[in-house]
Image (cartoon, rainbow, N blue to C red; front, side, top):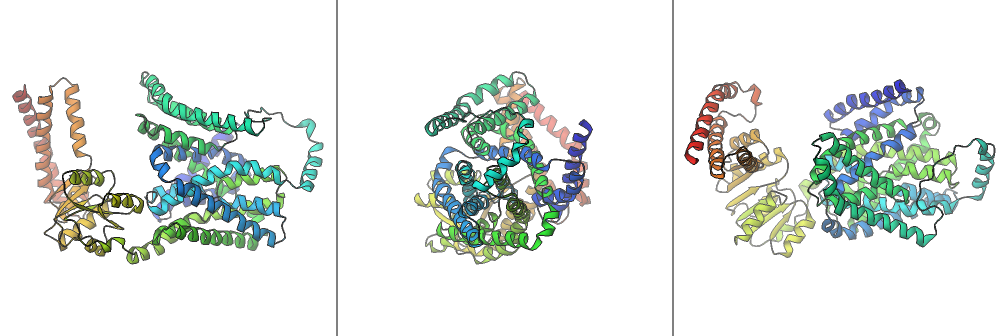
Length: 624
């Protein structure tokens, strides 16, 4: 048994290791790589007798951990700001999709109860695939990404009443057939431990227990997280931190399961509550690798769960239903997106991204069969539809990336064109870097124009009478609308190393009178920005690293004055070296292939170390 388990685990990991790099290299994304890996190893898993469904349920814990991490990155204030999208947009999506699918099923001769159950199953989308893909592509913070996240969160909430409703839809003939089939097996049925906290309780009692469980999650996240991690920190064992983080997520997921709630929803709530903890980043870094492993296995099992025998027998029907479902949900989502004022590419990202069925569909279909709601033959076809729609999702994102997004980047309507008096300072990107720069400038009485992708964030800035443009700051027409021709300063704080470089190159070349302050991602990026003409480059983590170095010197026993002088000498020496090397850097040649650059680095390394050591030594003597 041990050898069999290790063989299956080795096969899963080997398939992922081989398929995902190839898929990423082809620009298809990791999700499609995992799904393809599952399809390829499916015959082997069935040959060794692997219970793919059971493995899939186990690996769904990756979805739970993913939502926990998403919760950590949010806060109650931002969640409250999204309430209309979560409950109104998400609620409408679930209700409208359910009713339309139900009507179509009834039109094909199914009873209303089966049609409603099918509608509930197919109304859901894949939290795992959509969130993972949006995060990989950096689209989660866009308006389309935020709308998608809101709907997915509402769908997770909706699973709870769905599980309560489905048993009420049971068909008498199916119930009778199942009871007859189970008669001969009752004596040999397996006994199970009933761990539910709500079995046998009436409605109000169940509600009280559920509220108590949610209150317990909030209490644990608010008051116990920090003391528990402080206690664990005394052991000074990294693995104990990982174990504690995993224990907390498992415990919260278990508690939610015991009261009949979605474990993913419970851990998301816990993540939101724990987001203010001083151990937030520790939790995220500990859980993230485990989340990736479980999600990878989950996607592999989705690919492996496709029954190709049944698919071959019903190929036309299954493909027709799959493409019909994607088209139907896309139309519904596009209509809702337009009603909720999603514009251009964001509307299509929302429509295409959520057009598939979701992993909870596997759970609900099993539940409907067990509760005599949907016959096994129909459920088998629907399982294929769910799996294939998920398999096609990466292709929908590729369609968005390569066909739709480029069109809207060129044709996007620009709200900010109406600005009559552009400010002399333009801040491109209002995130954690640009936002601080902008607040500092405005606090000193300077007017700024902000360029950013998030229309919600920019709407908030407009309330404070800050001039803003929605869109891609690298677009020349948008820069013109923002007043780049008359601007004095441009602060480049957008995301993406290449995007920063290209924007800096364009402005330095076409508007040399503008003083460009560009954020550099790393040391090599400093050289790239220097080579395109920027002479005011800020390394995004450099100053904080110098402060950390100063703290390290103080911890070693040096006085504050000595530590500051030592750091100042290091800073001076480092800048001199960078200026020297920047003149030899060629943006079109990798550093390791630039012979002149590499030779100069080799020559300078030993000399620089000696000079730096001398400067630091002198600084120490002077300060002491």
